[in-house]
Amino acid sequence: MLVRLDGPGTLVEQVYAGLRAAILDGTLPPGSRLPSTRALAEESGVSRTTTQAAFDQLTAEGYLEARAGSGTYVAAELPDGSMSASGIRAASSAPSAPSIRLSAYGRCLADRRFEAPNPNHAVRYNFRYGLPPVEAFPYDIWRRLLNRQIQDVSLRSLRYGPAEGSPALREAIAAYLARSRGVACSAEQVVVINGSQQGLDLTARLLVEPGDAVVIEEPHYQGARNVFLASGARIVSCPVDADGLDPALLPDPGAGVRLVYVTPSHQFPAGGVMPIARRLALLDWAERAGAVVIEDDYDSEYRYDGRPIPALQGLDRGGRVVYTGTFSKVLFPSLRIGYAVLPESLLGPFASAKWLADRHTPTIEQETLAAFIDEGHFERHLRRSRAANSSRRAALLAALDDEFGGTIEITGSNAGIHVVVWFRDVPADRTDAIVAGAKAQGVGVYSVAPYYLTPPETAGLLIGYASLNEREIREGIALLASVVDQKPV
Ligand SMILES: Cc1ncc(COP(=O)(O)O)c(C=O)c1O
Image (cartoon, rainbow, N blue to C red):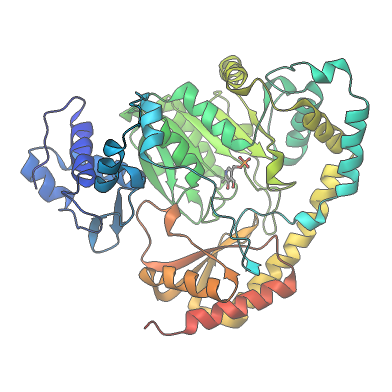
């Protein structure tokens, strides 16, 4: 196939643009197989590295799908339906559609939809990842503290507050992180944000220019990948193993990588915990590469086996780590409160970015949370939910063992509130049928494939367990087994 190479930009950008245009105008229809990167490179007179980089970017954006052992295909569903060939025609024939010129960022968001996943509340046994044990939350205490804030409302808490967050909460977070996570910071380095997602967004705005290389883990957290894609980054993936990301597989330090996004304490979603030697090697690499590391410590409050390893941030001597954490997994996600711990050099720009984005996180909730932590309720709640999650995890592991025995492999069970279950003998192309079959039985389970750029060869499911009780877990897994046992038709 011939890719037009007469547009603006680098060769990678031209190959990318040529392939994307061919997909959108229907020359490469959904489901069609692409030539190999080698064949395309030879035909187009560019290097294979160039075609591979263009394929990787289109895969990261959802236009292409790599199928292990069989090649690369145009995705059956393009990232944004309105940009498909028929979509473009429909949009241009709409009489009153104004033509609004979008920024590069705006174009990126128009090309694909980013939206909250369907919560799938309809299923009886929902093993959705990321739902904390909400029934364990001490509502009475929270209500009392919130009421107190509202009754005591002073002029101070009604005015705009500081962009960095309420001083009481920053102090409480800094002290908590020092005693529980080995994070070395002063309260001045803590910025309160609307969930760690905002930390990723603001960091990308400060550091990433369109075309810059950003390394993400493979598999990875899609919420991070999407932020970097929206900022125009060139996504470079780095494989993980049972010890998380391997710094030896990172690009050459001279390759111009701006940012590396990692989840070292509990790799998302596969679950590896990065040992200290790799943490030090990663920091050393970042120093040599002049790159910043985002350490997303999203759920390591829940640890069941093995000793906790101190945060990467606490080992960082060069001021290269942006550490983010969240209350979404330990309290509840709609609270929308998280925190970033920044190196001195980024503190000012980060606080300015927060101020420009939304001024600050709501003061009354921040001060309620500060009191909740200072009065000991937070860590008491953590201890209780850790115990509840630990029993649920044990029930899940036992149920999986009873139902599937040695036919599965489980990763990531030593921390967090989810595991990944691999069905050794089930090919990946049966996963969607298993998910659909389970849903028909009232069981919500979720394919692990969307978390990969190159999907795995065997069927894998992401199973969250914190929001179901032990009986529900056993019943749900038994139903799942009946679906997996069914022979494909
Ligand atoms: C790995 C990871 N990082 C970050 C987040 C973002 O969390 P929040 O923005 O709710 O703090 C999530 C949410 O599920 C996550 O799974």
